[in-house]
Image (cartoon, rainbow, N blue to C red; front, side, top):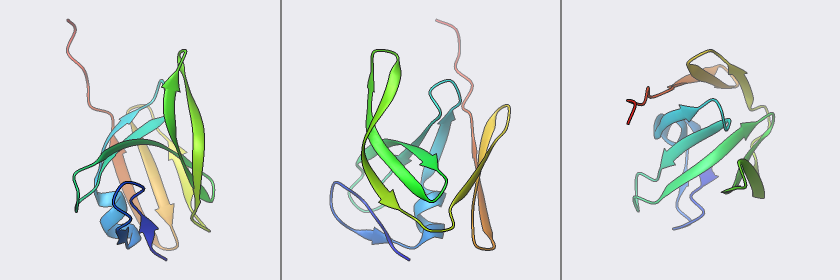
Length: 100
């Protein structure tokens, strides 16, 4: 299974793809991902069996494109999102924001 970058069309194995996730926004249920090849940054939603790509709009995230990833699972924690696929797993922490 190879997962694409929607910007440069490079494809990544799940470990390389999910290791590039840097931040989980629990309020919007979004993961920040930066392509290791082109540097493009995307926000995505991890859903059972797929990744949802889109844009924040009026306080919510509208998914416009979906990439099927059979067997993908997720578990929300208080300050993290745990992602699993087959026997592998990744933890994406919430970056605590400083008050302005």
